Length: 485
Ligand SMILES: *Cc1c(COP(=O)(O)O)cnc(C)c1O
Image (cartoon, rainbow, N blue to C red):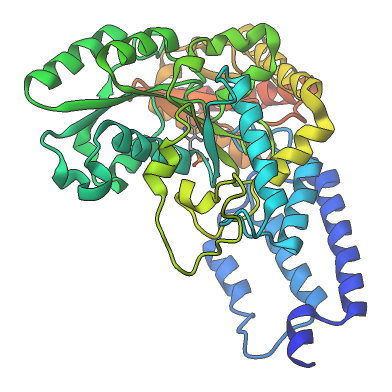
């Protein structure tokens, strides 16, 4: 093989490879519902398999493909299985899978507009669309696609710092007279804390506000804390509300927090990474009321919009702020688009060389349409209601209040049903059965609960019944075991 064929392979091999790829994908999405949901966690076995590939001699393309396909089938959490009741990792849309393959082949570079005018405009079109759905004035906004919610939250902190502290971009935190402080609830996503670290603020700059019994940020405590912090010389600059907590799908009091932010002149960020998708359901979008008053929004399309990872969005109603935060001059970057009234993505983003993230969203949304997504999200909400209803019938107690399909529960038949040992043992029993996947978490940082989320649009009533059945069996086994000891 010559130097080109080493990379591209010959045409005959390519054709066979593409066909094989298509078959592998089709077989996966057809048969994933028969797979064990959770993989066996055998690191030694996986490493010894990999040790057979030493890169010293080349292997046949189909053999290589089959090797990884088997590895993925055997050692992966099959989140596309309808009985994965897990974190916000959906079964990907078919159009999203096609989009990612196309993107790999065309490989558009989204650093500059002039390298990929179509791709950049597709993303801008989507940014305007989502911004207006969240109630922003789509003429006066900006946004960027991100690798996920973590990068979007990171972007929020950086833009807020740039906005609130004019010296920050030049002099960094050293340029500030007072220490910045930001506010999140104790139920907010950990990425906000980690992000504070990577912005140089440190964890201590994050004030975690306690939540009330409904797991929403206590707004009166927020107000008191801001006053206290000002008194001792801190500079409060940002408050983040969560619209759909990772733990329990709870939405903070967005409007009341917006009022506080306005009065205190704080940047108001809404982390709607998962819950933002409820905007597609007309009769439920009031759950997000007040989000239009935010300065910025995190929305992950790789969660409830079911596109393959990683596809997050950062939206802001400050049209210049991304540029002010990220712009830089670099002599080697192409300037072909000067004077065309367009903006290069790389000066509005944490990333430079960037994949065409927006295509999987564009193709999925274009083909499903607005109504298609409404149908899907409504179905999942309904499955959440069914799960709550079925759990209650079997003596489980729902401990979170939300209309969104995340269900946190304990057992109320016996006092042990609220213990850490119980919830851990039940989750483990369900997971090791291979039939379903659920998890445990702690609410208010100390109440142990079981957690099941309708993550997958393929989840049907029979899957809910199957889950409740496994739960009941596992519970019975737990109680008979402690009775014996
Ligand atoms: C998932 C999630 C994030 C983080 O997003 P990634 O895409 O995993 O980086 C942030 N906030 C909330 C509320 C989330 O649910």
